Length: 176
Image: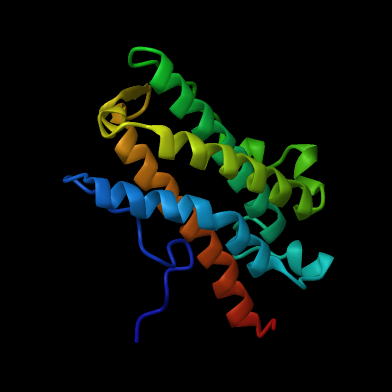
């Protein structure tokens, strides 16, 4: 049996070339569920466990939680930009450098609370969008024009991806 890929426990993101209202609804549900899922998967972890990398040379659980908050804050702003401007060019950022900033040593509860509030707002925004809004685009300097339905799918996957990192670490280490 092949070794599991610790970097992609649920597999790499698969682009859906046929967006639909059903797929959008599924991804919105993933975004809505994420804060509770992340809270549950880190529940009961000790500070030492939170500071354990999810894979060799990977981020710690603490860094993952703060990364998801950073990433999803950026995603929310990108959605707002794409809804209010004509194909705005977004600013990329170095996720690896952001993971090293001092605020990433804070308790995970800070980012979990932020995600709860952020995802509440994001969910309201997503539910208020018309189907045609999901075809609006933003310009990513590294990947070009990206429609919002694809951004939605990416961030639905992103939350599940990092939740699976922590779940897999707990299972491998026998952390109940």
